[in-house]
Amino acid sequence: MNRFFSEVKKNFGFGCMRLPMKNNEVDYDEFTKMIDFFLENGFNYFDTAHGYVDGKSETALRDCLTSRYPRDTYILTDKLSTHHFSKQEEIRPLFESQLSACGVEYFDFYLMHAQDASIYAKYKKLHAYETALEFKKEGKIKHFGISFHDKAAVLDKILTEYPQIEVVQIQFNYVDYEDASVESRKCYEVCEKHGKPVIVMEPVKGGSLVNLPEKAKKILDNLHGGSPASYAIRFAASFPNVMTVLSGMGNMEMMTENVGFMKDFVPLNDTEKHAIKQVCDIFRSQNLIPCTACRYCMEQCPKKIAIPDLFACLNAKKQFQNWNTDYYYNNIHTKNGGRASDCIKCGRCEQICPQHLEIRKLLTEVAKEFDK
Image 1 (tube, rainbow, N blue to C red):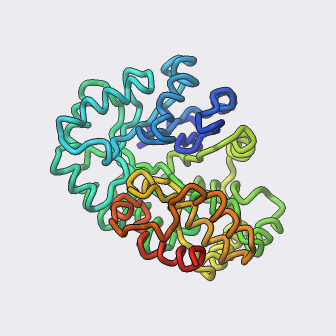
Image 2: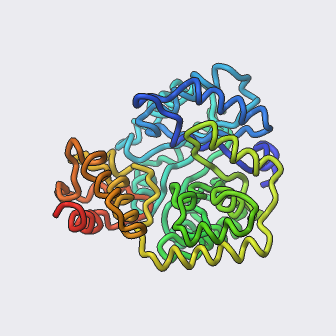
Image 3: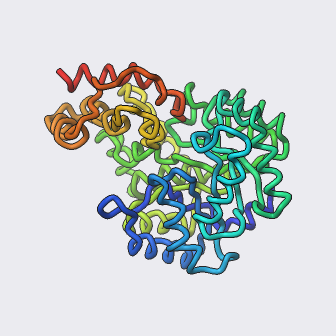
């Protein structure tokens, strides 16, 4: 396990699912500045996947990172995503296209993406794990792992059946830590049981732990020690078996802030942990939709409904009860169609949702609120 911790400098990684954008394209100037700053401050871990940023994440990393820095100065992780292959013979060409898109000859980590019970069954049937392990034998990946979105019992089954797995990426934040639908704590403990280091995704729960309800924000402000994002990321990084915590950063301001408190990382103290517990209690009392805005659902929606944005509108309506959410719903997110009431109940979104949300039912709630 220790070799992973020595390869990955510090315990904070650059998640490239959300990048700086300009006119619907990755802002290369801003992204390059962020990469340079990240590396200059001693960090080296970058995470991507083939579908991130509508397929633009890998090539942006090629143009802004891998073509500009020696290969041994950064750690690059990519993933095998379920919606990009349906036959075993499609896996190798897909993998080779990922190497090409990223401009590298090997990946430091290659993860079986978004594993849950049903997706894992597909990967087993198509021998995806075995194929990826062949890539490792060929030297095209250094380390083999999974990213995971399901209950702890499923994770235990996967790690038991494939002890070759070297690292596990899980959703882990203070709101989901004891959440019965996510089981962050239990999944972390399964990783410890199997001796697998943890990569943390969604430490700020898709921004939900940055844009806090006013009552919760006041609790953290009273600590006079940092931003809401800093407490969320430090919470995840405080656990001893965490190799690195990923953060998707959309601009240089976010990068500067996060590097500022993670460069000389300090775990949460008891006072901060107590405050976090109070914030959790506030979140649980609001009954908000626990969407992390990963946008996988949108790739599958035949009606092109901006599902995460519509969920965010309903959450904001519950929190603030103001006209602004109606304006955004009608004039921004559904201006060109894709209203909640347009849902045809096909269920394709639910099959890919990492949070296992009942999206069709929730869209009905959104429609009742906004499509009157």
